[in-house]
Image (cartoon, rainbow, N blue to C red; front, top):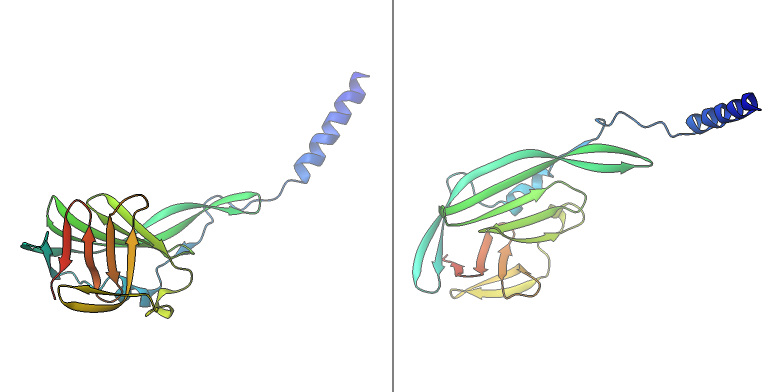
Length: 186
C-alpha cells in the first residue's frame, strides 16, 4: 500500500512539474528609452538655462538649470505566469534657485509616458499614451501670465488642494502655485 502511495505521489509530482510554464531568466526584461523627439518638448531648458520668475507678485528670482540627466530604473513586468525586469529610461532636469527653491521635470519611458513635475517635493504628474511628439500641440487651455497669453497649456492640479502647475510643451513651466506663487517672466 505504501509503495502504491509513493508511486502515485511521484506520478502527480512529475505531471505537475512538466506542466509548469517555462519562464525566461528573470534578468531577461527589455530596455525602454524615452522617445527622442519628446525630449525638446518636455525639456525645453538646456544645461545653461536661466529662467526668470516673479515670486508672490513682488520678487524676481532666477532658476538655474542643473543639467539634463539620464538614468535607468528597474520595473517588474508580468510575462504570462513569469515575472521579468524591464529597464526604463528616466530623464530629468532640475531648475534651482537655491537649496530651498527648485522644480524638476521627470519623464519615464513606460507605456504611458509618465511626466512628473516635482516642486520642492510636491509631485504633479500626468500620463499621455503614445509618443508625445505626435500629440502636441493639443487644443488645451489658454492662459494669461504677466500680460503674456499662452495657448495650449497643460494645467495640473493636486486633488483636494489649490496647488497648481501650468506647463507649456516646448516652453516649460509657466506658473507654480503652492505655498508660494511663481509666474514666468518672458
